[in-house]
Length: 260
View 1 (cartoon, helix red, strand yellow):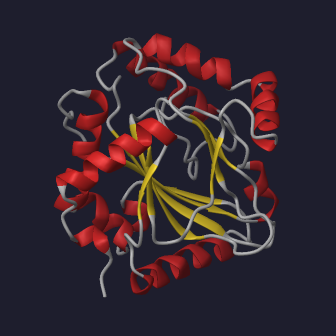
View 2 (tube, one colour):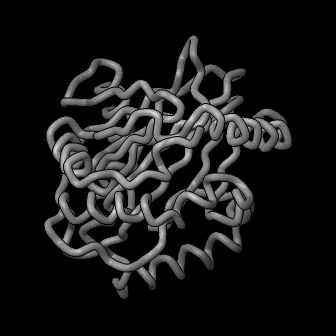
């Protein structure tokens, strides 16, 4: 039995999700991916982590997950329409043309813990998250977010200043403490495999909590609509980052962070 992703989501449900994102920070569709469809995705993630010695794996782009549902989903007319309408309801503007930026994140081992508690803003307006496998006991790697903490910036440089204000040791320590104490309006989401969760990733500060080292937490992320896609400053900075990355060890293949 197929999940809900092959069925068109009615406008009333899309409006409900958009309202929930605005009011509580996120919206969800339950059982979007069926258990039969989840099984091969879980096996795919487990194999990739085993190949990495039981440590963190991040796979970016549809080609990296070729032959799985994750490569098929962003081409689905139903899924694309769902994300486009959420964007339009959330911003009041027409959705731009463009593909998804997608990542499969598999957290396990000590490196998986190092990839946790990294608070950030996304570079794309809408983030769709599908849990593939989540630990059922112990630390489960909950999604933590400070919803809708900023507006969509009119310039790429203003967006960069926001990111720099969050991506520093002092801010990170402050946000981790706020998450532990449930302060500042932080929202904690216990993820359920097969559901799909939506939030304004560009506007919300968010991170995943850690899970136990011997447990696998795998999630698929689909990022939609970069408001600074045409920015000349963005192009220059990305080009410089790429050139620097090629000259440094450990920054080439396998890096899955979103492009600034």
